[in-house]
Amino acid sequence: MDLPSLYSKLGKNSWKILDAIFRNLWNYKYVPLNVISNLANINEEKTRRILRALADDGIVVNKQTEYEGATLTFSGLSLFSLHLLVESGQVEAIGKKMGEGKESLVYNCISKQGEAVIKFHKLGYQSFKKVVEKRDYGNLNFLVLSIRSAKREFSALRKLKGLAVPEAYSWEGNAVLMQLIDADEMIKVKLENPEEILDAIIDEMAKFYRRGIVHGDLSPFNILVNEDGFWVIDFPQSLEVGEANWREILLRDLENLLRYFKRTYRIERDMNSVFQRIIGDSGS
Ligand SMILES: Nc1ncnc2c1ncn2[C@@H]1O[C@H](COP(=O)(O)OP(=O)(O)O)[C@@H](O)[C@H]1O
Ligand SMILES: [Mg+2]
Image 1 (cartoon, rainbow, N blue to C red):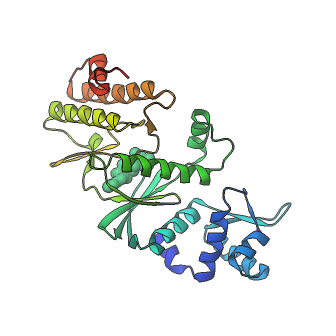
Image 2: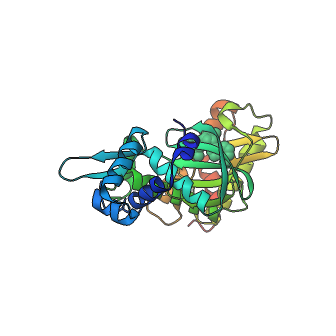
C-alpha cells in the first residue's frame, strides 16, 4: 500500500505507538513492548493488538524472541516522519509518488509554501555497508542512518540557500521537505549549449565550495535542467570543506562531471586548472 492510503488509515492510538517507537530508535534495535506501552499510555494488551495490525500493513516489525518488542520498517519511519511534518503545519497534503531512487522515495505534496516535494531517505543494507566503511557510524541500524542522511541533506541545502539547489523547507525523521523543481535529469536531456552549462556548473561548484560544501555524489543524474537553468540535487553524501578527504571527493565530483561532458559533448577541460578555479587561488 502507498503512503497516502496508509496515512489515512491510522488512528490516534497507532500514531501514539509509532511515536513511542520512533523516540526509542536510538536506544534499542527492537523497542520493548512495555516501553512502548508506557510511553504511549496504552495498556500492553491493546498495544500488542495495534502492533499486530501495524505489522500486517508493513509499518512495524514485531519481535517475539528473548523479549517482546517492535521496530519501524522504512514505510513506518516515512509515515511517522510525514506525520511530524503534518503536525507541525509544514505539510497540508501528500500527493503522488514522483520517483523512487536507490536511496530515496520522492513524493509530491502541498506544503505551507505551496507545491513541494518530500524526499524520504532510505538507506538499505548495501549503502549501509558503504556508509559504515566511509564514516564511523558504529553499528547503528538503517533507520538511524536514514535519519542522519536526511539531516545531512537538509543541513547542506540550508547552507546553499539561494544557489542552484532546491530550497529546503523542513526536516523530520527521514523526510526532507523541499522546493519542487520542474525539470529533467541532465542524463535524459540533450543540451543545446553544453559549453555554457558546464561553465555555469563549475562556477556553482565554486560557490558551494565558498559556503563550505562539497557535493560528494555529483553526476548527470543529480543535476536537473530545463529552459531556465539547472539545479543540483541529492546531498546526503555531502561533506564540509575540511572534513576528511574533502579534496579527493571534490576532485572525484569534478572528474565525473568532466568525463560526462567529454563523452557526451566532446568538451575537453583540464582537470587541474578547473580544480584551481573552484578552490580559488588560496589553494585551500
Ligand atoms: N526537489 C526536487 N524536485 C523535483 N524532483 C526531485 C527533487 N528531488 C528529487 N527529485 C527526483 O527524485 C529523484 C531521486 O532524488 P535524489 O535526490 O537524486 O535521490 P537518490 O539518492 O535516490 O538518487 C531525482 O532523480 C529526481 O528525479
Ligand atoms: Mg540521485
